[in-house]
Image (cartoon, rainbow, N blue to C red; front, top):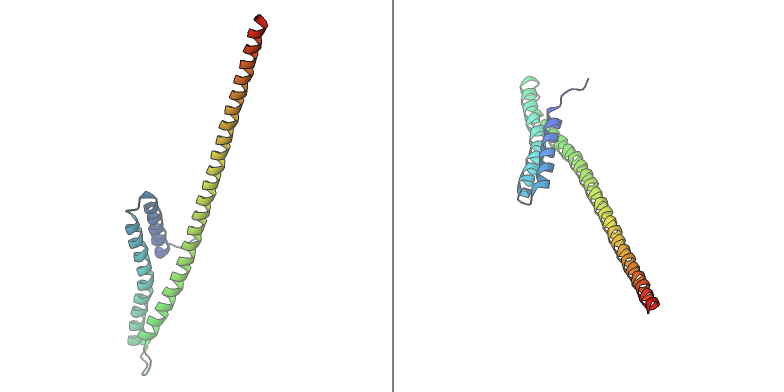
Length: 147
């Protein structure tokens, strides 16, 4: 049974909202940037705050003369936040590249379809011209035969 991870769930919601905003208009690009910055900020802030809380707790209950648990836990919190940001950015980059590839492939397919349609139109126009020429030659022959 999977446990509920609030950070992962909120991250997914924010990313979905940002992706929905991406598709709407250029005016929403500011909203997308704010959303991305807020996610980035929480990725930085949450581990550091947890490190501060754990460090303060450890300083009170496990006192050492020359060692500060708070500073150590803040450093560990920063390390966790940078690792989390790194993986989040890698995942976002992969999703963006996948989206761009799909968009590029869709555009290529659309261009192929347009080329095929123009070729069909040009072929049908040529066929019409040939039938018109053929019909006109037949009518010309018939008129000559009648004379």
